[in-house]
Amino acid sequence: DGGITQSPKYLFRKEGQNVTLSCEQNLNHDAMYWYRQDPGQGLRLIYYSQIVNDFQKGDIAEGYSVSREKKESFPLTVTSAQKNPTAFYLCASSVLGQGGDEQFFGPGTRLTVL
Amino acid sequence: GEDVEQSLFLSVREGDSSVINCTYTDSSSTYLYWYKQEPGAGLQLLTYIFSNMDMKQDQRLTVLLNKKDKHLSLRIADTQTGDSAIYFCAERMDSSYKLIFGSGTRLLVRP
Image (tube, rainbow over all chains, first blue to last red; front, side):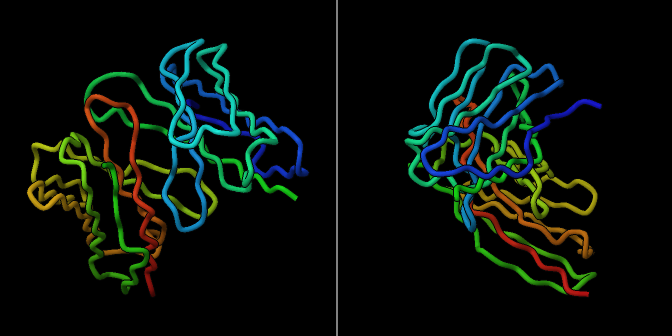
């Protein structure tokens, strides 16, 4: 089955630790995205990548880092510099093209900082 | 600037129609989307509309776009308990791959 997987589903971290969230897609999509969702708010874009080995900052990139070494994978690292990391993190991918360019979302990772 | 606004909550009785509203500020938006999110899950695209259209219908879903007022609505006919979820409106400019999301409307369908 084609789709986007994120792991783990739940993640707990102590303050001061870096943690990496996994996102993998087998849809052969060029573009991948990371969003953060807080209660009662819409999604905010952290980083996005349109091609391997290239990525751009979104609206709230501070305290986060990404890599795009393979087309299928776009891991997100939440660093200790992120002051309020507890949130629900969603990864998405899309075909770069015209038209509706639907973004397909993964099931999300809920990160809690203890 | 870019801003998308939605009301936070809507409650309807099963079998009634639901109308979820959204306003946006950027007149250069070319695509407008409706996504559905069930508890603890990712977002699922329901439908989208191109900015040169006024209406789009897909089974129980009807999207209306008033470009002059920058107002978008999603009507769900014969609402079912399985439609209970959070619905997000989002806009995208043709020059950008970035989606701007509203804060979501929580739809509760009462039996």
